[in-house]
Length: 127
Image 1 (spheres, helix red, strand yellow):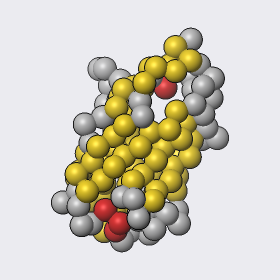
Image 2 (cartoon, rainbow, N blue to C red):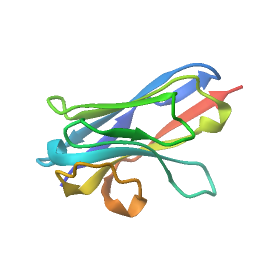
Image 3 (cartoon, one colour):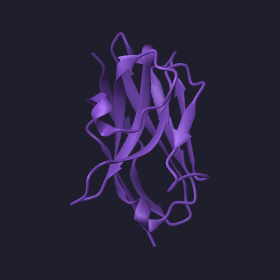
Image 4 (cartoon, rainbow, N blue to C red):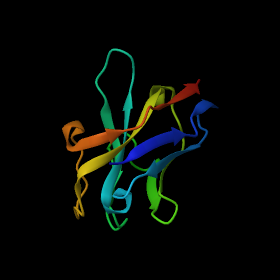
């Protein structure tokens, strides 16, 4: 089991940056691929970025590519999402998620692949 708590959201002006953090507890965090999703009211959650258990592979969705960096520190049981050049359309609740499979060498992007979710952190980008 993995428990996840996101932090770092808030209000930021367009063009600014944010670093979201996801603190994890549980024995399997270091073996789990991790991902960030986001959701706006009335829409489904969409994949933003993911990273494998060892950090060797990572992937950002096309709509944030070039503005997104995902990283992890297994010693601190934390995964991070750095977002730069933020746009008003980045406004959403951002969720951290842990893949149900362990030791996968690839990033999965489908919501159903992730069994464990945080409560979300709100990001608001003002124009």
